Length: 419
Image (cartoon, rainbow, N blue to C red; front, side, top):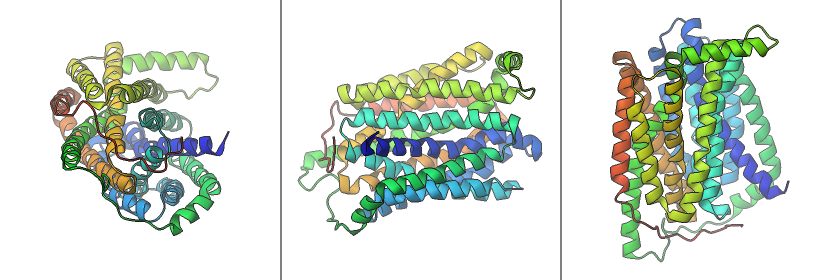
């Protein structure tokens, strides 16, 4: 493997770990802690909320520091910092302690998106497919959080779900440093000349277009974040309620072929969630290729319409039908992820790109944090059917906003593209 391919692989592994760490607690809370600590699921969600606020709020300073100091250096901080924080969180004995641990994990998790995506969009061409491939890795991290945590709950306890990924992340950080330490030192000492966020030669028309697209990007980012958080965080609990029959059949089948005696329904639910997340994440590859060919407007409209249809169909469904429709709306939820990142990568200049991504993810992950109390409130008062109806309305809002996008975007100069 060439150094360039290893570089891209490590960035992808970082995205995988970023989403894995932020969703370990979702499965732990749904399948283990509410029994072990005697705390209700809705109440447990409140302790995860500060971590998601940190995930959003610290994205902007992370992007600013990456632009001013070193992008690769910040990636090393991400790998090692989030790994240590995860290991420490495994020692929590109370909901408050685990909430503090999740907050620190969120601080380090905030580094990846503004920094990693800035590196991907500046170093390589074919931006759409590169962002999509990187996004698939992130979504596999989402999927693996349910799979790995569900398995470890049945076979070793929930604490190992924090310890093992933490140690692995620290190891990846050391490998990243060994690969990039010379470039990090060169990047730190290199002089930086401030430039406009959209290029110094931008016309008034292009600036107006930039502001218009930016407004749409931030609006759709906020609304789509509600959809993404609600589906990814709540899916293990949704499956726990809606597909118990299917999970029990799968668990019985696994018991029949497994040599161990402790295969449980939690493993089956985690496995089914993994299947949905993993298959749905492949939608990003199709979306990425379509973005390079068609542009964001047409692709975004198709994805938003898909979500509207499947969210509207979900209320009242159970077992096989619920599983199939959940796969449909997750295809839309994951498929929309690279679209806003593609638009930012096309329009923001390299010197401000990490900060622009930082602002995008401040909006995104702050909404993620606000979504948790919303999920808890809606679930506690009306159940998941009302949540699906709310998400259908959110998909309609996105569809209406995307109509105002231009058919083609102007492109800022991509400095430093390697190939």
